[in-house]
Image 1 (tube, rainbow, N blue to C red):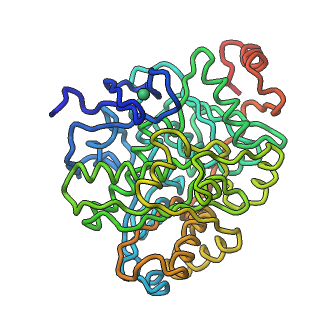
Image 2 (cartoon, rainbow, N blue to C red):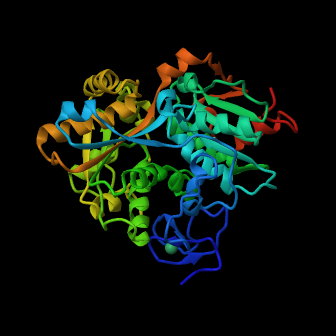
Length: 434
Ligand SMILES: [Zn+2]
């Protein structure tokens, strides 16, 4: 049945449906935490070649408009890494900057995909400032796109990740930046971002629960399936919040309803960076709940990993529609990859494919190497390796980068609702202006 709407939102737990609402993040019914999922009235994807960047896939984005942006994931068949690993059908989803292959995500991260989708979902006449808490890549993506399109934006990030917020262009004054200093981590930034987003004049992005974020990220699989002409057998990606894995699964489910490809569920092979592997540990012990880790222990482990973007302490794992269900449904697998394995994989990838990749992408490649060595994937099976971020080295060669400086700095101890409100209010009617 064709709905009067472009899409509806359906609760993955109780099935309740909602009309499109750009600010709706969760189900109203009182039950355990759950994700809403988009159900598009266009079951069959029609690629709109004339629209810019990712908006060629606008049929499967919860947006009513498109943005003038050029980046998208690119998919290509690997020759040298594939040969090295003895695989016949290894495909790379490359998200980043690589001019020879026309990869033009200038923040070098697939987080730009979700920024495009989330920002296009916000209505044109919206007056409030979007708040995003980030460990780096997401923040950089939003800061760049908001700056380019002059959309009011407030970024909250741990001070230790400051160097992650750069752009090839200078930042517009509509982009504001708040840091958490000392040993404040991503979790502290999330806490602070949540408080700020509830103040007058601000609104939260929502993280994993925002359908626009997930449908934007899922475009890596959409682009790959359209390019390859089939749904891959295996999907490799490194995960921090788990959102990327959920998104890939949801894109797969959408293709099953599309019916244009052979009906198949790709097996999710998701990886985390040792010694911070909450989801890998939970999955390997058959547990739907993440094992409790004290704050001190979590921070100690986080300090040791090279892929800091994978260190979310509250991943979208247990909730309805979350990563645990995605792994169950796809007979998935989780991996732990050491810094050393990740580094080795990165060097190998750069040598063979000709472009540098991030530590997180090194973790995903490390997991692929583990699977090949364990003999769990077939030589002839089709494999999609999501290089979630790459080309930073190349960016630095081609462009001089500008860095964003914080307007305000909070200590972790100052992250209390009353205190944050007081500090923000004490700055008058322009709390975020330098
Ligand atoms: Zn519900």
